[in-house]
Image 1 (cartoon, helix red, strand yellow):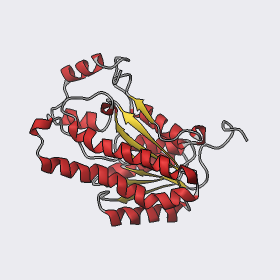
Image 2 (image 1 turned 90 degrees about the vertical axis):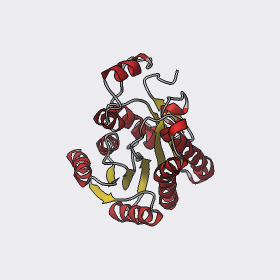
Image 3 (image 1 turned 135 degrees about the vertical axis):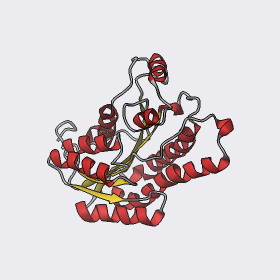
Length: 259
């Protein structure tokens, strides 16, 4: 059977941490459209999680949800075990979580805030990797993490995103290098400015206005802000059988912002 004729995913399920978010919910939908059952987590809004689960069910696949504080190691382990119990295995694990990042110059960020973001993002991702790897290894599955295109081109006032995500990228490379001998793949999608999640929160908080968006578009080679589906398509490609020989990579989906 050629790669193109294989199903995108084996039987079992995908776990999407942060699946209730603006980008995470679309990842859940596109995974389901590719044939995956989805177990998704949320932090506070059960309503948003249920809406994301409905997108999965509308695609004809099973969906389960769980409220999880990802920086809690034990809760994450329980969540992973519940996902395995629900679907039999985990062929895909996606880290699409992370707190809202206010736009602040580094000179104004207290060390306590950096510590909090490292716990809420970097440690959260490590907890997920640590709990899920034994199960992903069993089925030669894959791990995908969302980070930021500012890893390549520094975006002023974005330190609370870039610093924790740098650790996330290092972890993913470590998984790719160490777990490849078991058939596990691990990759990163570096996210540019997208009309979801941070974008809408920034508008609500008054940090993003029309002038800001026009300036952002001028800095993007394609001269437009991206869509959540464009991130989801990259994630699902990396998770699928079509990327069977791709590991340890960081794919920027940023419209050319980092050029």
